[in-house]
Amino acid sequence: MSSRNHLHAYFRLQESHRLLHKALKAFEEDSSDEEILKRVQAATDRIREAVAQLNS
Image (cartoon, rainbow, N blue to C red; front, side, top):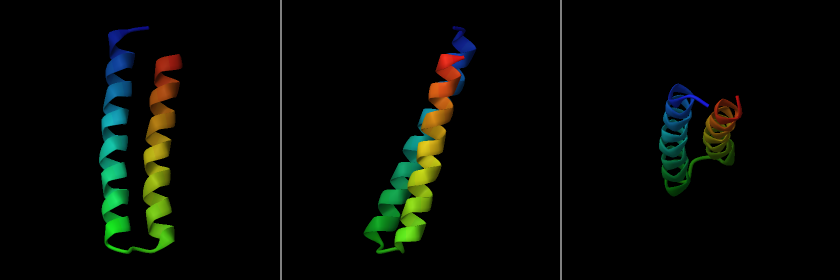
């Protein structure tokens, strides 16, 4: 596995971390369940992309 794959995965995980913080902020602001789930799903998608990158 190349360093480039690791770097791409790292950036995706960094993005997922930011998205999870946004989901937490939405929760703290009493946003709708739909909005919170949308943000959590976006973070989950980035994590899946990172795993796929590491497995390629």
